[in-house]
Length: 330
Image 1 (cartoon, rainbow, N blue to C red):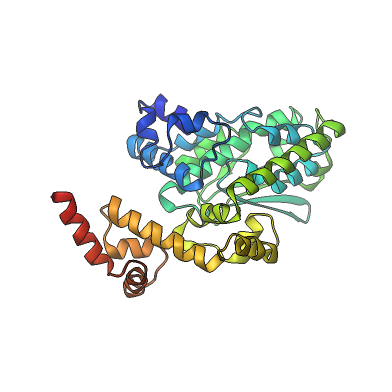
Image 2 (spheres, one colour):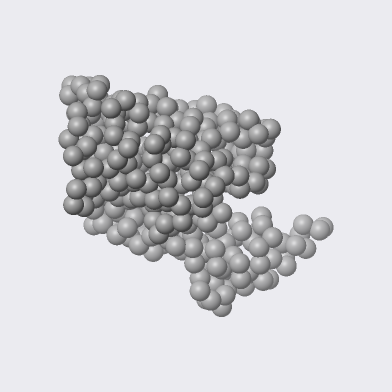
Protein backbone atom coordinates (compact mmCIF):
# COMPACT_ATOMS: atom_id res chain seq x y z
CA UNK A 1 0.00 0.00 0.00
CA UNK A 2 2.88 2.37 0.76
CA UNK A 3 4.47 1.57 -2.59
CA UNK A 4 1.21 2.36 -4.39
CA UNK A 5 1.17 5.79 -2.73
CA UNK A 6 4.84 6.32 -3.56
CA UNK A 7 4.33 5.38 -7.21
CA UNK A 8 1.42 7.82 -7.41
CA UNK A 9 3.95 10.48 -6.40
CA UNK A 10 6.44 9.47 -9.07
CA UNK A 11 8.71 7.12 -7.09
CA UNK A 12 9.97 3.84 -8.48
CA UNK A 13 9.54 0.60 -6.59
CA UNK A 14 13.30 0.26 -6.16
CA UNK A 15 13.47 3.75 -4.61
CA UNK A 16 10.67 2.80 -2.21
CA UNK A 17 12.49 -0.34 -1.08
CA UNK A 18 15.92 1.26 -0.78
CA UNK A 19 17.62 0.25 2.46
CA UNK A 20 14.97 -2.31 3.45
CA UNK A 21 16.63 -5.51 2.25
CA UNK A 22 13.37 -6.33 0.43
CA UNK A 23 12.90 -7.01 -3.26
CA UNK A 24 9.76 -6.91 -5.43
CA UNK A 25 9.86 -10.73 -5.40
CA UNK A 26 9.68 -10.68 -1.60
CA UNK A 27 6.52 -8.58 -1.69
CA UNK A 28 4.95 -11.05 -4.13
CA UNK A 29 5.71 -13.96 -1.79
CA UNK A 30 2.70 -14.68 0.48
CA UNK A 31 5.04 -16.22 3.08
CA UNK A 32 7.24 -13.12 3.33
CA UNK A 33 6.73 -11.09 6.51
CA UNK A 34 7.68 -7.42 6.36
CA UNK A 35 9.26 -6.29 9.61
CA UNK A 36 8.42 -3.01 11.30
CA UNK A 37 11.88 -1.55 10.62
CA UNK A 38 11.45 -2.31 6.91
CA UNK A 39 8.08 -0.59 6.75
CA UNK A 40 9.53 2.41 8.59
CA UNK A 41 12.31 2.54 5.99
CA UNK A 42 9.76 2.61 3.15
CA UNK A 43 7.84 5.39 4.91
CA UNK A 44 11.05 7.38 5.33
CA UNK A 45 11.88 6.95 1.65
CA UNK A 46 8.37 8.16 0.74
CA UNK A 47 8.50 11.16 3.09
CA UNK A 48 11.99 11.99 1.86
CA UNK A 49 10.66 12.15 -1.70
CA UNK A 50 7.33 13.90 -1.09
CA UNK A 51 7.98 15.74 2.18
CA UNK A 52 5.96 15.62 5.40
CA UNK A 53 2.76 16.41 3.55
CA UNK A 54 -0.39 16.42 5.73
CA UNK A 55 -2.65 13.75 4.30
CA UNK A 56 0.14 11.53 2.96
CA UNK A 57 -0.59 8.90 5.60
CA UNK A 58 -4.31 9.20 4.83
CA UNK A 59 -3.58 8.30 1.20
CA UNK A 60 -2.00 5.06 2.41
CA UNK A 61 -4.78 4.29 4.89
CA UNK A 62 -7.48 4.64 2.23
CA UNK A 63 -5.95 1.71 0.36
CA UNK A 64 -6.88 -0.70 3.15
CA UNK A 65 -9.94 -2.83 2.37
CA UNK A 66 -11.57 -5.75 4.13
CA UNK A 67 -9.97 -7.97 1.52
CA UNK A 68 -6.48 -6.61 2.15
CA UNK A 69 -7.05 -7.05 5.89
CA UNK A 70 -7.22 -10.78 5.16
CA UNK A 71 -8.93 -13.25 7.46
CA UNK A 72 -8.94 -10.69 10.27
CA UNK A 73 -11.16 -8.42 8.17
CA UNK A 74 -13.69 -11.20 7.66
CA UNK A 75 -13.56 -12.10 11.36
CA UNK A 76 -14.52 -8.50 12.18
CA UNK A 77 -17.23 -8.41 9.52
CA UNK A 78 -18.95 -11.56 10.82
CA UNK A 79 -18.76 -10.61 14.51
CA UNK A 80 -22.05 -10.54 16.42
CA UNK A 81 -21.75 -7.07 17.99
CA UNK A 82 -19.55 -4.00 17.98
CA UNK A 83 -18.06 -5.21 21.28
CA UNK A 84 -17.20 -8.60 19.76
CA UNK A 85 -15.54 -6.91 16.76
CA UNK A 86 -13.40 -4.72 19.05
CA UNK A 87 -12.44 -7.78 21.13
CA UNK A 88 -11.33 -9.69 18.01
CA UNK A 89 -9.43 -6.68 16.67
CA UNK A 90 -7.48 -6.32 19.93
CA UNK A 91 -6.85 -10.05 20.25
CA UNK A 92 -5.35 -10.35 16.76
CA UNK A 93 -3.96 -6.86 16.20
CA UNK A 94 -0.59 -8.50 15.39
CA UNK A 95 -2.17 -9.67 12.12
CA UNK A 96 -2.89 -6.08 11.10
CA UNK A 97 -0.44 -3.52 9.72
CA UNK A 98 -1.24 -1.09 12.56
CA UNK A 99 1.66 0.75 14.19
CA UNK A 100 -0.42 2.48 16.89
CA UNK A 101 -0.92 0.61 20.18
CA UNK A 102 -4.66 0.21 20.76
CA UNK A 103 -6.17 0.31 24.25
CA UNK A 104 -9.90 -0.12 24.91
CA UNK A 105 -11.66 1.11 28.06
CA UNK A 106 -15.22 1.72 29.22
CA UNK A 107 -15.47 4.95 31.20
CA UNK A 108 -18.90 5.92 32.48
CA UNK A 109 -21.29 6.09 29.54
CA UNK A 110 -18.51 6.21 26.93
CA UNK A 111 -16.36 3.58 25.25
CA UNK A 112 -12.83 4.94 24.84
CA UNK A 113 -10.32 3.66 22.29
CA UNK A 114 -6.80 5.08 22.68
CA UNK A 115 -4.14 4.91 20.00
CA UNK A 116 -0.67 5.11 21.54
CA UNK A 117 2.06 6.51 19.31
CA UNK A 118 4.98 7.30 21.63
CA UNK A 119 6.83 4.17 20.47
CA UNK A 120 6.73 5.26 16.80
CA UNK A 121 9.90 7.07 15.63
CA UNK A 122 9.18 10.83 15.65
CA UNK A 123 10.08 11.40 11.98
CA UNK A 124 7.35 8.99 10.79
CA UNK A 125 4.90 9.30 13.70
CA UNK A 126 2.38 11.65 12.05
CA UNK A 127 2.45 9.55 8.89
CA UNK A 128 1.62 6.27 10.66
CA UNK A 129 -1.00 7.81 12.96
CA UNK A 130 -2.68 9.30 9.90
CA UNK A 131 -2.47 6.00 8.04
CA UNK A 132 -3.83 3.84 10.87
CA UNK A 133 -6.68 6.22 11.74
CA UNK A 134 -7.63 6.65 8.07
CA UNK A 135 -7.71 2.85 7.69
CA UNK A 136 -10.05 2.62 10.69
CA UNK A 137 -12.26 5.31 9.18
CA UNK A 138 -12.24 3.34 5.93
CA UNK A 139 -13.33 0.08 7.57
CA UNK A 140 -15.90 1.32 10.10
CA UNK A 141 -18.72 2.01 7.57
CA UNK A 142 -18.10 -1.41 5.98
CA UNK A 143 -18.37 -3.12 9.35
CA UNK A 144 -21.14 -1.16 11.03
CA UNK A 145 -23.30 -0.02 8.12
CA UNK A 146 -25.04 3.30 7.59
CA UNK A 147 -26.69 3.34 11.01
CA UNK A 148 -23.53 3.99 12.99
CA UNK A 149 -24.04 7.10 15.20
CA UNK A 150 -21.28 9.27 13.77
CA UNK A 151 -22.89 12.35 15.29
CA UNK A 152 -22.01 11.07 18.79
CA UNK A 153 -18.39 10.14 18.03
CA UNK A 154 -15.51 12.35 19.17
CA UNK A 155 -11.85 12.15 18.14
CA UNK A 156 -8.96 13.91 19.86
CA UNK A 157 -5.50 13.63 18.30
CA UNK A 158 -1.96 14.70 19.09
CA UNK A 159 -1.56 15.72 15.45
CA UNK A 160 -1.51 19.29 14.21
CA UNK A 161 -4.54 20.99 12.60
CA UNK A 162 -3.52 20.29 8.98
CA UNK A 163 -3.18 16.55 9.66
CA UNK A 164 -6.53 16.49 11.47
CA UNK A 165 -8.26 18.25 8.58
CA UNK A 166 -6.86 15.62 6.22
CA UNK A 167 -8.32 12.88 8.45
CA UNK A 168 -11.73 14.46 9.06
CA UNK A 169 -12.99 13.52 5.58
CA UNK A 170 -12.95 9.85 6.63
CA UNK A 171 -15.11 10.51 9.70
CA UNK A 172 -18.26 12.23 8.38
CA UNK A 173 -19.82 14.63 10.85
CA UNK A 174 -17.14 13.96 13.47
CA UNK A 175 -15.08 16.81 14.88
CA UNK A 176 -11.42 15.83 14.88
CA UNK A 177 -9.71 17.98 17.53
CA UNK A 178 -5.97 18.62 17.10
CA UNK A 179 -3.12 19.17 19.57
CA UNK A 180 -4.53 17.02 22.36
CA UNK A 181 -2.52 15.07 24.94
CA UNK A 182 -3.31 11.70 23.36
CA UNK A 183 -5.09 10.06 20.42
CA UNK A 184 -8.58 9.00 21.51
CA UNK A 185 -11.81 7.98 19.80
CA UNK A 186 -14.94 7.77 21.99
CA UNK A 187 -18.44 6.48 21.27
CA UNK A 188 -21.53 5.95 23.45
CA UNK A 189 -21.12 2.81 25.52
CA UNK A 190 -24.49 1.53 24.38
CA UNK A 191 -23.11 1.22 20.82
CA UNK A 192 -21.01 -1.74 21.97
CA UNK A 193 -24.07 -4.01 22.12
CA UNK A 194 -25.30 -3.04 18.66
CA UNK A 195 -25.65 -6.02 16.32
CA UNK A 196 -23.55 -5.87 13.17
CA UNK A 197 -25.44 -6.09 9.86
CA UNK A 198 -23.44 -9.03 8.49
CA UNK A 199 -23.10 -11.01 11.72
CA UNK A 200 -22.73 -14.75 11.23
CA UNK A 201 -21.79 -16.78 14.34
CA UNK A 202 -20.60 -19.83 12.36
CA UNK A 203 -18.41 -17.74 10.04
CA UNK A 204 -17.11 -15.70 12.98
CA UNK A 205 -16.01 -18.87 14.79
CA UNK A 206 -14.25 -20.23 11.71
CA UNK A 207 -12.55 -16.92 11.00
CA UNK A 208 -11.31 -16.53 14.58
CA UNK A 209 -9.94 -20.08 14.49
CA UNK A 210 -8.04 -19.23 11.30
CA UNK A 211 -6.74 -16.00 12.87
CA UNK A 212 -5.44 -18.01 15.81
CA UNK A 213 -3.78 -20.58 13.54
CA UNK A 214 -2.24 -17.87 11.35
CA UNK A 215 -0.82 -16.03 14.34
CA UNK A 216 0.53 -19.29 15.76
CA UNK A 217 2.16 -20.22 12.42
CA UNK A 218 3.74 -16.79 12.17
CA UNK A 219 5.18 -17.08 15.65
CA UNK A 220 6.56 -20.56 14.94
CA UNK A 221 8.03 -19.53 11.56
CA UNK A 222 9.61 -16.34 12.78
CA UNK A 223 10.41 -17.46 16.29
CA UNK A 224 9.80 -15.44 19.42
CA UNK A 225 13.22 -13.79 19.21
CA UNK A 226 12.49 -12.49 15.70
CA UNK A 227 9.19 -11.01 16.83
CA UNK A 228 10.96 -9.41 19.81
CA UNK A 229 13.57 -7.84 17.49
CA UNK A 230 10.76 -6.38 15.36
CA UNK A 231 9.30 -4.75 18.48
CA UNK A 232 12.64 -3.40 19.69
CA UNK A 233 13.53 -1.64 16.43
CA UNK A 234 10.24 0.25 16.26
CA UNK A 235 11.60 2.93 18.57
CA UNK A 236 15.21 2.20 19.55
CA UNK A 237 15.31 5.29 21.77
CA UNK A 238 12.54 3.88 23.97
CA UNK A 239 12.65 0.09 23.86
CA UNK A 240 9.81 -1.61 25.76
CA UNK A 241 10.29 -3.48 29.01
CA UNK A 242 9.96 -7.24 28.93
CA UNK A 243 6.50 -6.98 30.52
CA UNK A 244 5.37 -4.45 27.90
CA UNK A 245 6.82 -6.58 25.08
CA UNK A 246 5.00 -9.65 26.39
CA UNK A 247 1.74 -7.72 26.48
CA UNK A 248 2.24 -6.55 22.89
CA UNK A 249 2.96 -10.13 21.78
CA UNK A 250 -0.15 -11.33 23.67
CA UNK A 251 1.78 -13.82 25.81
CA UNK A 252 2.57 -14.12 29.51
CA UNK A 253 5.99 -12.70 30.56
CA UNK A 254 7.04 -16.06 31.99
CA UNK A 255 6.06 -17.76 28.73
CA UNK A 256 8.07 -15.16 26.81
CA UNK A 257 11.10 -15.86 29.01
CA UNK A 258 10.78 -19.63 28.38
CA UNK A 259 10.40 -19.18 24.62
CA UNK A 260 13.48 -16.97 24.43
CA UNK A 261 15.48 -19.42 26.55
CA UNK A 262 14.42 -22.23 24.20
CA UNK A 263 15.86 -20.16 21.35
CA UNK A 264 19.09 -19.73 23.35
CA UNK A 265 18.68 -16.02 24.01
CA UNK A 266 17.14 -13.61 26.52
CA UNK A 267 15.43 -10.24 26.61
CA UNK A 268 18.64 -8.51 27.78
CA UNK A 269 20.69 -10.23 25.06
CA UNK A 270 18.22 -9.10 22.38
CA UNK A 271 18.38 -5.52 23.64
CA UNK A 272 22.19 -5.59 23.38
CA UNK A 273 22.16 -7.34 19.99
CA UNK A 274 19.64 -4.89 18.55
CA UNK A 275 21.48 -1.81 19.81
CA UNK A 276 24.79 -3.12 18.46
CA UNK A 277 23.34 -3.84 15.01
CA UNK A 278 21.57 -0.49 14.83
CA UNK A 279 24.63 1.42 16.07
CA UNK A 280 26.81 -0.08 13.34
CA UNK A 281 24.14 0.51 10.69
CA UNK A 282 23.57 4.14 11.71
CA UNK A 283 27.29 4.94 11.86
CA UNK A 284 27.89 3.25 8.51
CA UNK A 285 24.91 4.44 6.47
CA UNK A 286 23.99 7.87 7.84
CA UNK A 287 25.72 11.16 8.46
CA UNK A 288 24.72 11.16 12.11
CA UNK A 289 27.29 12.10 14.71
CA UNK A 290 28.21 9.71 17.52
CA UNK A 291 26.11 11.81 19.93
CA UNK A 292 23.10 11.66 17.59
CA UNK A 293 23.41 7.87 17.24
CA UNK A 294 23.68 7.54 21.03
CA UNK A 295 20.49 9.59 21.44
CA UNK A 296 18.61 7.50 18.85
CA UNK A 297 19.53 4.33 20.73
CA UNK A 298 18.23 5.64 24.04
CA UNK A 299 21.51 6.53 25.74
CA UNK A 300 21.34 9.64 27.92
CA UNK A 301 25.13 10.02 27.84
CA UNK A 302 27.52 9.64 24.91
CA UNK A 303 30.12 8.16 27.25
CA UNK A 304 27.82 5.26 28.14
CA UNK A 305 27.19 4.56 24.46
CA UNK A 306 30.92 4.70 23.69
CA UNK A 307 31.67 2.20 26.45
CA UNK A 308 29.00 -0.17 25.16
CA UNK A 309 30.20 0.17 21.56
CA UNK A 310 33.78 -0.62 22.63
CA UNK A 311 32.56 -3.80 24.34
CA UNK A 312 30.73 -4.81 21.15
CA UNK A 313 33.42 -4.05 18.59
CA UNK A 314 36.67 -3.63 20.48
CA UNK A 315 36.97 0.08 19.73
CA UNK A 316 35.11 3.38 20.27
CA UNK A 317 32.50 4.60 17.76
CA UNK A 318 34.61 7.61 16.76
CA UNK A 319 37.43 5.31 15.65
CA UNK A 320 34.93 3.13 13.76
CA UNK A 321 33.63 6.16 11.84
CA UNK A 322 37.16 7.26 10.94
CA UNK A 323 38.11 3.79 9.69
CA UNK A 324 34.92 3.63 7.66
CA UNK A 325 35.54 7.08 6.14
CA UNK A 326 39.07 6.07 5.11
CA UNK A 327 37.80 2.83 3.58
CA UNK A 328 35.20 4.69 1.53
CA UNK A 329 37.79 7.08 0.09
CA UNK A 330 40.22 4.36 -0.97
